[in-house]
Length: 403
Image (cartoon, rainbow, N blue to C red; front, side, top):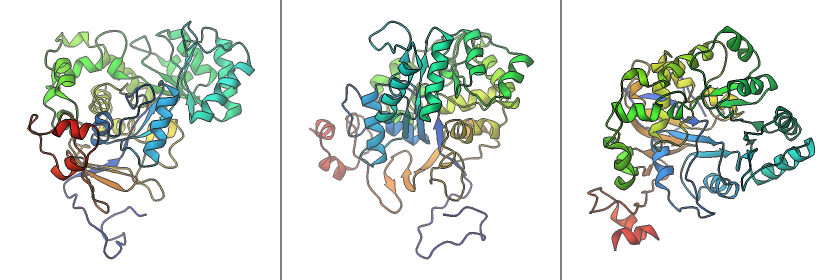
């Protein structure tokens, strides 16, 4: 409704005031490439710890470029209806796979491509993933079908630089995953920077050497994170995080990939985070931090997680910045991220569409206070405080936890 300097914004009588003195407010984070466990074979959890962990880290929206169509779009509709809590979900649904498999999407004509895109759009997709269609003419047919159906196309290049360049020339919405060469030169920057194609290098799973996820396991005690450890079961988190790979710094090729992405961003190529679903929300911050390690300023790195993905994915009318008329997706950070970007994961509150959540409990506070129901791994055995009244009222996993 309003945003501005203190004293310049009229506050309605009776409004609840949340004191955020000394904190930083940023737009909700938008993860442009996230493969999430929102469902499994058409079963949608009533309360998903993956979704809650992600939202607790400030991920208020995500784009999933490969998931089972029936699962992901059902979860997206339930989230929009308030039936489940979690990030806003946008997705391609099932990929348009060019290799021989049980999900092969045959594209030998424009009519074939139109059939696939109309089918996926009817299920709820805003985009399609053109994945390993072997011939350029097939990828071009998907693009023309997208123009006719008003959809986006996010391709994956199979770690082939020449294929990536044809994707840029042909006008895809983005190029997903890191280029398979660590450095690029002016020919690539000039070509790419002039045609509006976005870049989502997915640093957590980058090519060419040890990737970002391994970097943060090696250099931080991930399993001790106060938010992550609240929402991810120890049986899932600790086996992956406690015993971690170590290697010389130069083996982490991902830093060079991030440096190249910084150069591309400054050449006019909108670059976005894409945590790939690695490490439930914390991976989003890893992406932001790695862009900073690659040379981005804190404000440049923040834009890769906010306005850039909103603009690339056509969501900037509603998301990506704090402006009058946009959806109230706000992250309150306990620190100054413009001085130290590594403070971005110190989340105090997350607001999504005007609903305010306390972190780390993820109880809803504000106008409609509501305690979160406990997860199956919480309670006395885990030494995690939960709301006993919520436990009494919980169904399904809650009864398993208590009894």
